[in-house]
Image (spheres, rainbow, N blue to C red):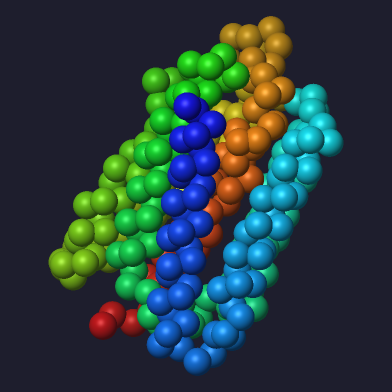
Length: 232
């Protein structure tokens, strides 16, 4: 059931990304006709890359230096930096209302329940869940009222979005800190050795570091870009 839920959320986000691209493509001639195909091809290649990392065992064992940041997180962040530095975001900034990427960030509620499922399965410790010290579920929950304020164009909407975005990034940084210290400095949490099972480096659990977290960061940068635009 846990694997199914991972795949369900992954598939739902694939659909959302494709729908957003197709919608902008209809009103913007700058996007190539083959863009949607290339988008899904890229996502599929990234998924295959994660599967290859899983099957090859490159990411195991969880030792110092950590391999997930090098082989998974770093390439994802390089793509995000290239995407925005190359201006690939501009056609989307023009046609996607800011409340939509904010609302999509509510997917983090589902991610937090998946992390809880990992704990219940014995793959990770409770400290990494919202029953421990991971409070990122608040980001997903708050995304809904913030998106509503933006949709209604409330006077406090932009200020609320700035506050929520900064808070959400801090909560995301907290998750990264928790996972890294559990692996590299488990003594900080009262463990004599790393409490995260090597199974965490396998699919579909690898999607947390390989897709869900980078996608949240990608959306945050997109939201910041939209906040920099002049008010309508």
